[in-house]
Length: 196
Image (cartoon, rainbow, N blue to C red):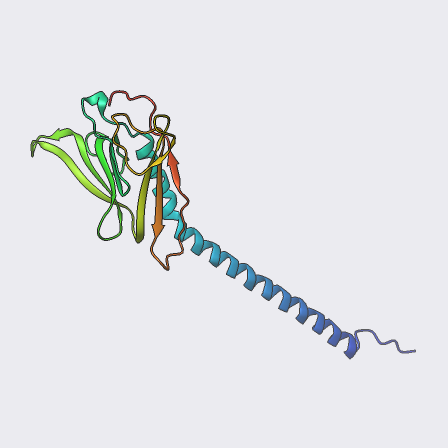
């Protein structure tokens, strides 16, 4: 008696078909995963600079004072820019971090940080100054200042009082075609001004 051991041709073909279907499914899954990873990486690259912008601007506005503690009234707020006394980020500070700071959109559609240091540079007998680009490719920048009481509470596009406003709102509008989006930033400056 002869017993045949092994697989028939039909069983081998069925096994190859099933293996082919599994491989096709795995390759599609890998392709989908790689596409999703690539899109996520591109999204992170596009928004990573906005995280740094957010931290920098929040730090500057959060430490904003009018400079009254130093014998000045430096807080001037308009719809397209703001000037105030604050603490510079470590990346741009030289000597002292306390400075008179201006945030404003320039003619090249960039939100610029301009500072005049609180210390006098011995070489020039003038305050050390500098400029840095915060974010570029902007359509517009608008600042608003919260006023409570008086002739009614609400957002104003100009601030002329001696004390810093209780809230500052910054709205960035990116150029057409730029897929970046940034929600309005609302920051409460220091409640009490101290020394520098």
